[in-house]
Length: 145
Image 1 (cartoon, one colour):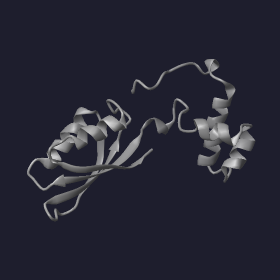
Image 2 (cartoon, one colour):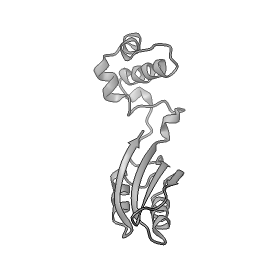
Image 3 (cartoon, one colour):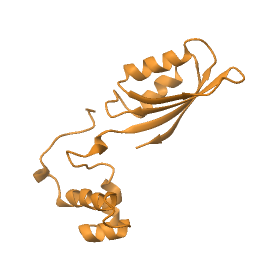
Image 4 (cartoon, helix red, strand yellow):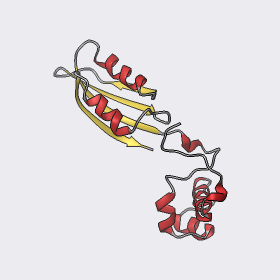
């Protein structure tokens, strides 16, 4: 698990964090259809919900797995994709999908989806490592959750 997380007993945390989790669950289960309804039912402000919704999770939550989608433009050379995969492996990501277009103008466009829940470092560190490869022309973080 990342060094950005702690495991602590909820007695040490303010009650509104439990309410944030409850509001998110109301939305995910479609018990309510809007954030306004969820926060009203949970008894918290919208500001509190938006401030903490991406940072507090129930222990059994699936949200502990994180995903990212990265697009990369590589030089059309032997070993280019292998070097990207090596970096991703060394930084403890789990490759979910790789889609590579047919190289055009000596460039290969690659789209990679990753599970980054065990990432060794930050997403910025990962992007920098990919940018520093001799085969890389461009790296872009398309999405992260």
